[in-house]
Length: 50
Image (cartoon, rainbow, N blue to C red; front, side, top):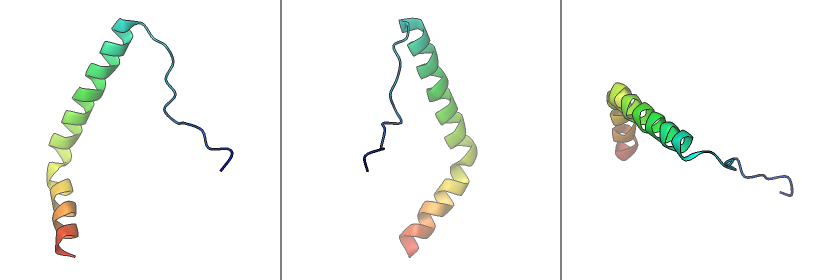
């Protein structure tokens, strides 16, 4: 498609902002996985059984 654009075009940012966003995303990811671990485990286990 001619209209496909990269959804991950990042602007230039100060080092401090990059580190702050990285820390936030890592903490968010860890909390998300800890909270939804059982559901994700069920989903992937069910896929293996199919």
